[in-house]
Length: 167
Image (cartoon, rainbow, N blue to C red; front, side, top):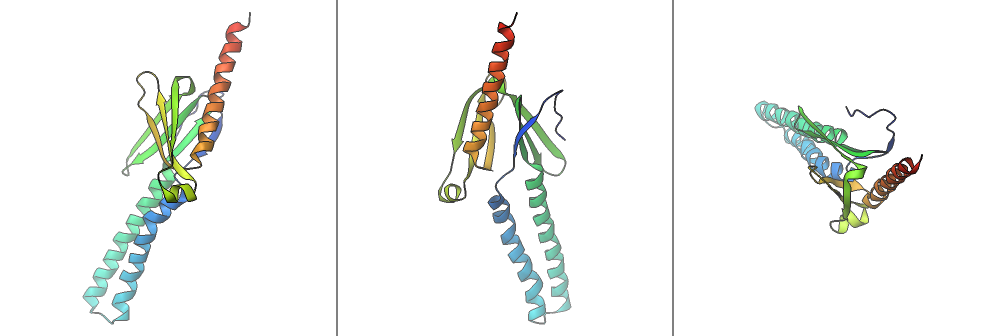
């Protein structure tokens, strides 16, 4: 769960592009169909059918793992920071955030033909201080998200400037 600060508002959210989930699950789904259909189509031995069923269960678990990983990896942009929540394995969740005032550079990379056609890419945030670079991989419309982050950074810096100049 991502905890927001007092009066912190979510501006945008992003997950990996749907095509990534598609490419991770469709080959397994095709294999699942083959494993389930072939033993029955050729009237195989019951032991072969048993192992086909066992293999099918393993494939279903792999598909579910990919879907859960997709659903629980999220990037949240608030009016104060960029937050990345990532699931590593089943029981390890990493949540990292970079305050907008610490952002020094944002780089967008669109790696290849399919990324260009389907409008997804990587967005890397370089920050000041002890913060590690944050890389948002295979997100849809990374240029738009970069613009949102930069707009929030500008609003934050203008708000700080106005507060400092007020008597």
